[in-house]
Length: 250
Ligand code: OAD
Image 1: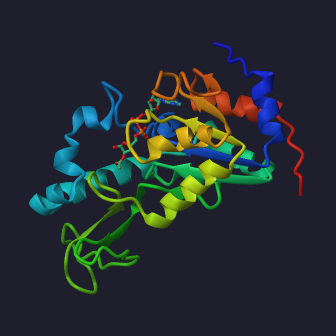
Image 2: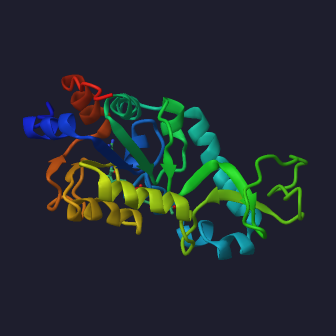
């Protein structure tokens, strides 16, 4: 189906001094990475988040939780960024100021070439000490599952945000600052089911930004957004970029 990109949407993007973008699992769906809430294929349809994505679950069964994240890492390692990721790399080059905020932990934006990605929910490919809660860049893989912290010997855990945990404060502050100072805010491939990320587009609206939703499905943002593109990110974003010759206001 041909996607119509309204001229007024392109005008808003063309004139923007600062574009902020929030992405969710939907932007990686076309790379073969499962989303969370798709009824059939979503991770939370197959696995119980209370058994895999909380501190309590890890304390109960660290081996099972670590292996589940290792399985997700292997899946993502086989995936490649898609046209949606690459269109955002282009958008970053063209906008005078650009902020990319993601809920995704797959690292595909950075692999596509995006710079300074704000990772609100962490990253699958990083680990931290379960006891000290500090990042551990290098650890000895001596076959123990989970591996151990080289400093205190406690378990390592994936450096992702689990349910009931706070988001990294600096990333969160930078995300809300971008939502409140941008001219155009894109919300791409997110169901808007998880706070505080879900509040970002509404905050941008309250601060006068043009808000553009890209999602094949309806979300709580749909009837509030300035523009809604009912389409896949990999189809809609390249179209916005293709038709848009942004003059870099260096
Ligand atoms: P969800 O799985 O909740 O939502 C994915 C959204 O992407 C849905 O609204 C789909 O309609 C949409 N979608 C699917 N394919 C798409 C495509 N090709 N292009 C554009 N959109 C598409 O995932 P998130 O909103 O990212 O948090 O979930 C938010 C958070 O909930 C995650 O970061 C994770 C999860 O629990 C934590 O783990 C802390």
